[in-house]
Amino acid sequence: MISPKEDISLLEREPRFEDSFCSIQAVPKIPKIQHKETRILVSHARRFNDEVVRPLALKTDLHSFEDPEYLPWDLVKKANEWGFYTMFIPKLFGGQGWSLPSHTYVIEELSSACVGIANVIFVHYLGFMTCLASWNMPLVNRICRDVAEGERTGNPCLITLAITEPGAGTDVEEVELVDRGRVTCLAEKVKGGYIVNGSKIFISMGHVSTWHAVVAYSDLKKPSENTVILAVKTGTKGFSFGKHEDKMGQRACCASELVFEDCFIPDDCVLCDSRDFHNSPIRSTADLVNQLIHYVVEVTRASVGAFGTGVARGAYEHALKFAGETAVDGKLLINHEWAQIMLAEMYKNVIAARLAYVEANYSNSLNGGVLNFLQIKPVYYYMKFVPQTVIDLFVVPFYKTKIFNWFMRQVFVEGQSVEAQHRCSGWSSIAKFFGTDMGMKNSQMALEMMGQTGLRHDQGTEKILRDSKLLQIYEGTNQLNRLNLFNCLIARNVSQARVFEE
Ligand SMILES: Cc1cc2nc3c(=O)[nH]c(=O)nc-3n(C[C@H](O)[C@H](O)[C@H](O)COP(=O)(O)OP(=O)(O)OC[C@H]3O[C@@H](n4cnc5c(N)ncnc54)[C@H](O)[C@@H]3O)c2cc1C
Image 1 (cartoon, rainbow, N blue to C red):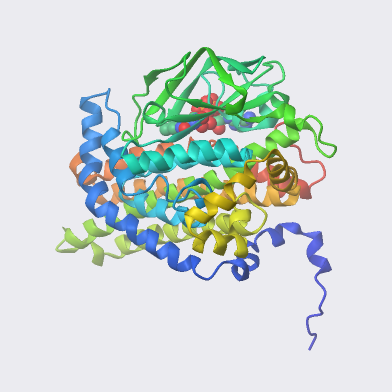
Image 2: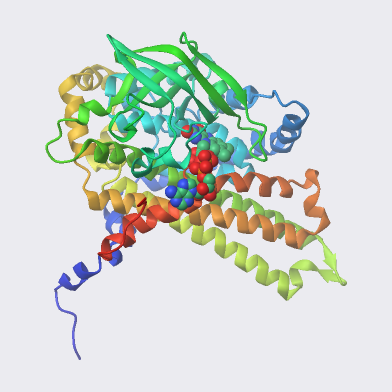
């Protein structure tokens, strides 16, 4: 018998294999009580589904067709009452501080009932993640305290991310492409701040949000090296809302145009300025801006994978119910072998999609991703058990210092290794395109099984299909995410391979 040697050097020849060890590497590092936290949160989401989402999902969809001016204030108020907008904001910033990696399971749960309403809640965390990734702690603190205050007073305060422009969607998501795109949102440096001109489109929840993390450029000829991320508050002079889109699905969640006309944003509202990176001795400015954008999408693409998983599950549940209640050729559909095969396929799609976002989660939270810091056991337990007043007294003043911000950026932006970035970003792309493709696939299969019944609005199944398609487009189209996977996890092993070449 030849026994295995204590030698893993051969694995170095094929790093792809190591990349799929995220969960094995992460499990020993997970704080024990996190499992309980996740169960509590999923149960909370299930109750919210029963009491709020299911009674309102179809009504809201229909209402939005009758009244194209509909904005989801009613849903936002409900979600605010149920604590969803501060749930995953760390106690460091006055939030409830539930473990961030649990958010994907909550997303799946809500999306299984209505992905449009799930997005009314979770696109706020896309804005929050952008703020967090800047590591501009005083400004993140200011914005998050507004969110917490909004929850206390019943006046919801939400955050958006505004990056897409009328002439540039995919291009602005990738720093390698942005110099080729037609970006027009100009942020001119003036004394004490920036003057912004231009517009953003398809910004989820724009009209009903208070803070907007706006990506603009101080030089439109070379945006990759001149990116600024500004925190703009609704009501700021020179900032207004244009139309909101009359779109195919997820109609509960508005997609807004933001318009900037000589809008002055003071320096203390600059989340991140690529000039801060100009002096990095190790990496180019474009590289660091790329790192920052990937830092955000590493988390948010996994979240969209969870949206897709939830949709796949919702469609499966509709098909299962129908098959259990409907007789075909004298026996229940569920007892026909062809239906059993279809249901088994749909079930498998849900489980496999879930595994993909869970693996991405492990990578983000415990293997060098943006959530790593809060998951380190001493930090996790400190934040969990130390009362808010103590955190506010002893930690908050400390992190408002410039040196602390500099330190956080060194460790978490400049300090993230290229390997970690590639692993986290590659896995998030897998979770995103696989989860959302499965959402689409199961929606189609459910409609196939249900025949004409599935096409009726009052059944809710055709709505799942309409909602599902959008997931393949936002957070980077699924084509872009496939290219990103190739770029992050495949190209490095093939010396001649190039991605995004002109
Ligand atoms: C419902 C909804 C909500 C949204 N919410 C937000 C939001 O909150 N904030 C925000 O900033 N944006 C948001 N967006 C915008 C979204 O991120 C963009 O739609 C997305 O990035 C795609 O851009 P695009 O639609 O302009 O497509 P395009 O970039 O025009 O792409 C068109 C096609 O070309 C392909 N393509 C483009 N470039 C390449 C390339 N280099 N290689 C190969 N194929 C390529 C794409 O895959 C796609 O198939 C939202 C969009 C939707 C639909």
